[in-house]
Length: 529
Image 1: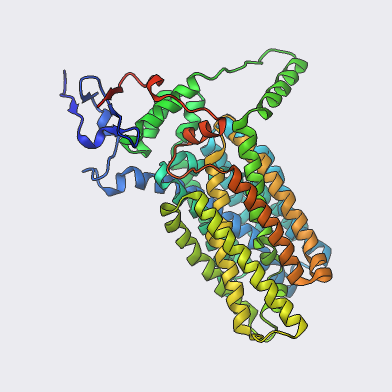
Image 2: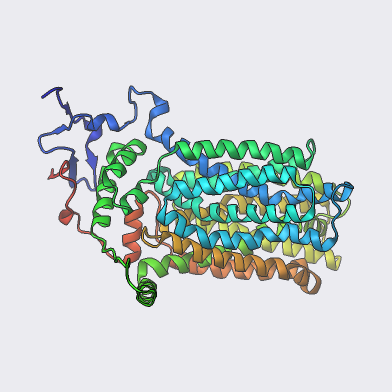
């Protein structure tokens, strides 16, 4: 041999089950093939901490996290744009035009959600993310140059397309890049990035004009584009496209050696899939083939169970009050706290509370099981609804003995804490874990469209409910919706913490794979202890 092979050390021996029945050895003679060990970067590697799989996962997911922050910048930008345009004589807008500038993002978001599954399924997750970020960078710079209403409206349409694409891509890409034990924490950074984006918009608007902010956001989005382009394609997509050697190379660069079995199981699962080729057939035959495919898909447990579960998690997410508070912050805070308080200062304070709570959620998600965290945090959210409703009702009836602004301030901070630590991050985390590989794109599309419908209903009915049943009645109604979503979610949600995506998929399918019948890669031998 040109160079000696490297003996497998103890840290490269993979424990497959907690019971310790099996041990994986990477070669049949106890050695690794040449350069095989070099592709891995185990803990404590002499390559340096910056080249460990964990740091590579941090770099790859940072592009997606910045994309999520870009979504928040787009959604909150009207809170800066419209007030400054009212004070300016350059672009004059009436109330109808202002409402279109604010709302067209929601319409375009739906279009982005619909088109992205086909792009990410055909061209890859990285390509779809690069398109989304490139579109957003161009739109921010175009908005800087905009000088009339129609230009601004069209640019906001493009921004909505971009954030619609990111809303599906972010949890999927992070879930496919990261190790099971880090996956929850990385997925939690989506909510953290959104909170940072909101805080940036509210804070920077004090010092910069909307045109200056457009240039700043253009620069940050271009940085995101560079990170995305320099990141690899996800191993899951490469395996799905039959690019197995490239899949192995990327997987071993991003993951630790003890995760090798996940790689071989993923490749084996894709090798066993049957691909139906409809090229050259008539339109009628292709349509019939697609229709049969969707009908068969709808019958599979691994498709419909995660979709139904995510429906109810999105019910929790939307009706927990996050979007309503963002849209009607001053109206709601004035009722809860009173009108003799600086609401702007309270808004910045709650933004900081959100940020701290998101950091706390990243720590907790590493330690606590998903089901326990879901039950605990959503129960706190329900408690905040009930306490706030009781406080507002007592104030309106003049029977409150605690009618002080500090009580309302504590209640709104407690509510925002429950949102940031559970209601917002958990749907992102779980959606990045439960969808099976084959239907990941369409499952995300369907569930996010359901979320958009809930968002439209809640935003359109909020003022009507405030006027007719009051804030306390509205909060009690929302608490009922959240309770229903929590009950169904606790029944349907399996524990996903520290499990591989394939293991979670098999659990929804109801199949327990017999490990002894698993045929691994030729370089792996399973030996009983």
